Length: 260
Image (tube, rainbow, N blue to C red; front, side, top):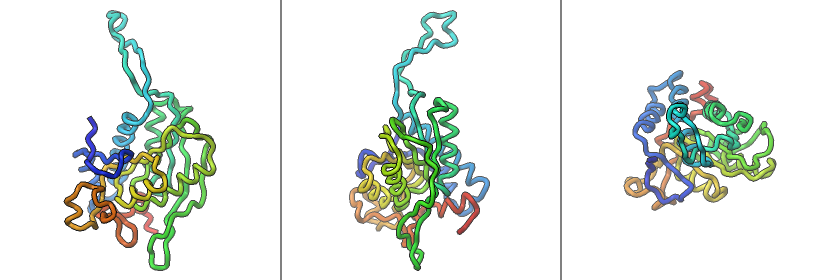
């Protein structure tokens, strides 16, 4: 049974409640954690996250499978609804923070699904800021998209769901420039904020969101005692520079040891 935290944001938003994954994520966020452990933790967390998303969101079909016991026991036949490994999947790399998560999801899916139905696209996107270093939007500087997304599940494995700017720009790019109607759009995050959920719900309400933690650390003590989403307009998880609190710092910088 998959346990999620209780909230009122909407049915498309899933914030998992798993003590082991929460502990790994807390270790990742600690100021005392450095490379190479950071990348190792990202891989562990995304292996768990992609497995759960596949189990909960991917199509299933009725299967009849003879087990290794069948030669001696004709009853050794499984008749179950199982994941359809012929499902078409695209995982989207949102460079920089999404490079490792997307590659991991791509490799995971290639091992299990039909490789000819699995692909990875690449989007080069970054925040745009004003003279006071306040985030004012997101800008796509280039992309490599491998074709149609017809009847495909499109995944966005991006660690931080902060402002929602990058995911919304990317979704709009696919809708405007890429042929086909996907089965689902799904984002996979380690941390999300109330601000992120509000933006994607407003601009792309069909997006399904999975996260391991909700951060709203700049909300008042009174709001922090309420069920998430009850007073959505009063919840805050972003500081004035649009970084998540308590957060993990800028994972794009930390993953690459490039602090620019």
